[in-house]
Image (cartoon, rainbow, N blue to C red; front, side, top):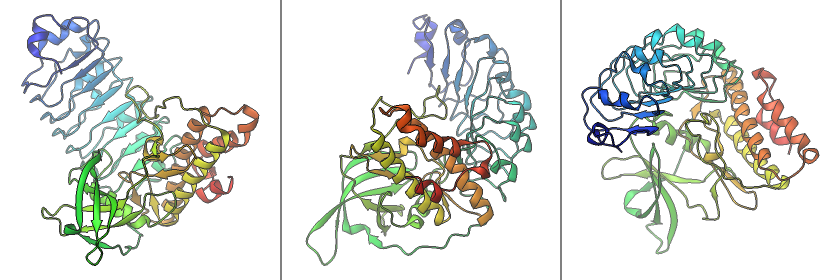
Length: 427
């Protein structure tokens, strides 16, 4: 974090990234002194309601964060910033998205948790658009012009007012990650019974991790009639809207998924939390399991980043087979995971794998839509398979069959892709 005092004193000359959060009520003119170097500008957590009309003077600006500011309108000056490809206005008060506020190089647009009811048709002119984050708004429909965005891969429209997923959306050639829970759609899943675990039977221990949807802690579960205790993991959900949707939708999907060898086992649902928090009790995973990849960076946009681990072809096959089996299980239960990525997979050196993080999961609205949703997710699997093969130490001859499967999974014609049951049989 930087200070306005240092900026005014000239101490930040030549920096490429500026973070200013100091209850600013207006855009500091001194930022323009960085016009020759500034590429990333983060003004989140201030009191800004507008940006200067001549923002394009920041000629090297590529990434702009303005989250948690009381903007009611996406600033039109953004449309004149020629190199700007990432725009983030999360948790503002935006109602209006003007057509000319969309920069020509736009790849990622994050407008999560606002008050937007409509998007301009001009969004279809954003030919480079790959990621569109719109969860937690008031959209009743998406503009059909979005169908022209042939590179669009990730769409988050959870917790809106959408009554139907349009056919054109389900036919987009590059779409691989779609989150839509929390809309007034049909829902054909049936409730699964789950064990209720009273809060007093849990003794919380250290925090294992924290994400947008909640906190995971190690705990001991003690039954009333048993002196022994079981080591478990407890996830307590937050009530806030995340970039993927509602944490409570995530919990519902976890419960409905049931048991599978390549999913983290859910042991029960927390009952009688003193603050009324919602949560799940899950199996505690061995520390031999580690996260497969890191999430996408701002530059990689929709692609995970890997640490350079080299895998044998046998390990790739074992991991891919496990994840395909997990996805086949989910879709057989009418569940779309929505976030099938390496950073949501745990694995060990033996090639065992577990698919986690149901934050973007949603239930099929109907069977026909479900068939299309499955093949959209198959494209995400194809991308993952390609990434695993990129880290494989085997030669091209040994991986030829897997590369062919990858291409079938990512082909542009959605309904020509195989379903997960067929993918699973390839291993």
